[in-house]
Image (cartoon, rainbow, N blue to C red):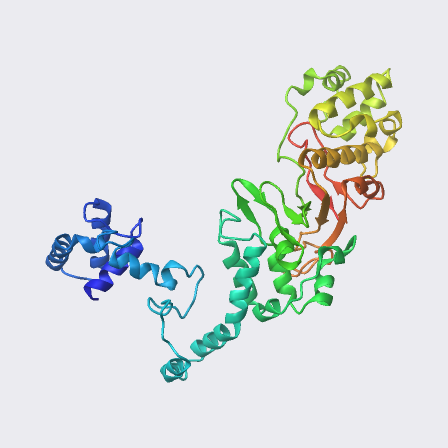
Length: 425
């Protein structure tokens, strides 16, 4: 390794992009690199001394320009300064902005991998995917899918790798993206994309299952996929899920919540509803069965109704408890059994959706079945038949979908489940 190459490697590893001889951590890093080269201790000390004598090489601006010679080389090298994604054929010099590599140069190199099937396949795949690779990252950026979309990973890179692994880079490149409205009100994502693209089922499944976190906020399953696969959708700025031509589209997969996990009602026993439950010796935290049993025992059903509305006005203050709770809802016998079609359970869900919609300004929802693998109901590793089932609705359409059983959540409870998870579609 030449001195210039050593300086370049040292620069790439340094935190600021250029090493400083007056920085102990940079000196330690240099010695670590030299040890990796298996140089004798004496030579290491000698090289360090040489660099100390020529410290200007590692200082920015010493030649009257913005960068040091080492930093300028780094800036002009796309493989390190601008290449953000893995490239199996990249070298330190292969992405120079001023590169003079020609097709003939590549042809001359091919005999070096003659007979190496793995290398030839990689080369073939890279060449075939290159145009689609550039196009993919441009499209991802337009959809607000960037390296900052999630904290836990590089989202554009990961999504591209899904396409590449499944040989779908070219298929995505020529994909004529449909508008979101073409999904209609309900259907199945697998079936839709079988009809509208040449993307494989495996790609569709993996892209829709991709998720992460952004600044502590969950970026749920399907959010980036919908943005990537529909021409009029993109990731929304701020706390929203998706922007649909300026409207807020909220995506909810299986077991998602319209609120916080494990949220409970503090001081429940001090509320009117809590006092009634204690007076009638009811310890059930399940709100549907608790209220259903109280309705069967209290002397004044109107007192219970008042207590329920008061409770929900505090638990879900942006809903409309007075609209959804009445004597007919409370006196439904199915409440005591906790059935999914009980009037009380449906009233809770309607108010729950209204609370979330009003609080966050949601214009449209898409709830979809993201439970990929079955237990007894499907072959292990094979998507369940209901995977990808979806329903699209506005907040105003939610009540009807709750009434006909299309939308459902787990049972609400005042203890650690005020915001139950979705269970349908």
